[in-house]
Length: 109
Ligand code: HEC
Image 1 (cartoon, rainbow, N blue to C red):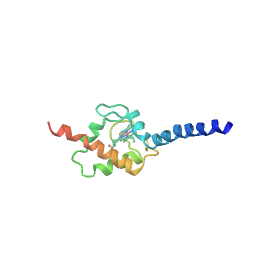
Image 2: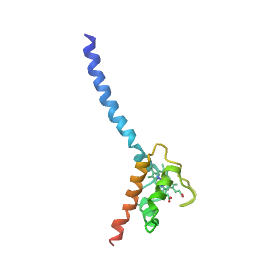
Image 3: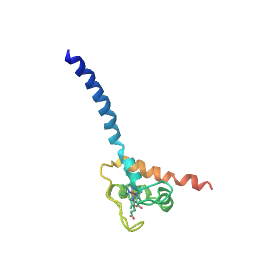
Image 4: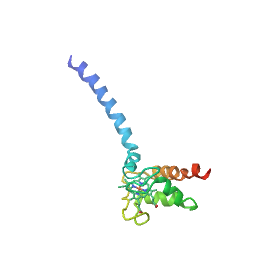
């Protein structure tokens, strides 16, 4: 009798836990937003300013990746960026490409 109650509730539980686990994997994107905005300075520089500064730097992707993974200080102001714990190499690469892609709309002007 009681089993009938337990089994559906286990399904409900896993349905709640699985999306939560999925979110954890991409939560670093959310964590960036605590300190960064696309077009204006927050704690850290605006991503558009970062893109503009590295526009002519062929090592931009590697440099931005390293800053995200190992932290960065003294390049933009008095505040340092701590290493982003939990950020994978692949994610850092994706963010770096995304940030540099912000240059494209401005280049059309
Ligand atoms: C605790 C606040 C904070 C968080 C969280 C944070 N940043 Fe930063 N970020 C900063 C600050 C402050 C700087 C400027 C550091 C400096 O002056 O060198 C910075 C600089 C940067 C730069 C420029 C680095 C360079 O070499 O010029 C990039 C790119 C960047 N952040 C991307 C990210 C991404 C992507 C994330 C999320 C994975 C993230 N940041 C999370 C505060 C933060």
